[in-house]
Length: 73
Image 1: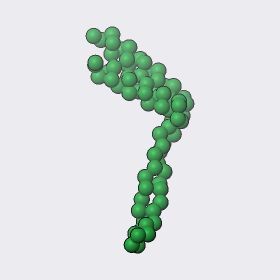
Image 2: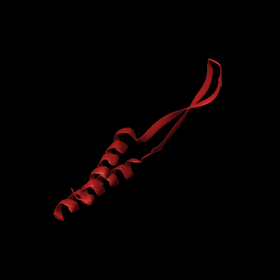
Image 3: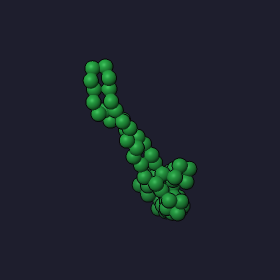
Image 4: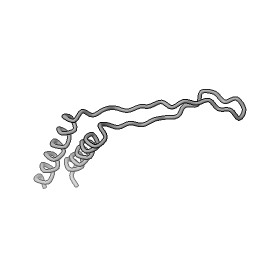
């Protein structure tokens, strides 16, 4: 598969994830202190939101790149 096709597929997947979940979100657990068997920790939430307009542009751009990559062969 050509590089344009691969980039197109990646853009389509990111656009669909943006529509389905509104972005990507993840959390990390941080250990603050450990006193013997007692452990104090907290979770930090990270992520970014993908607006629906941007998701639509990503899907359309991915389709355009996928078609352009297929026509260049």
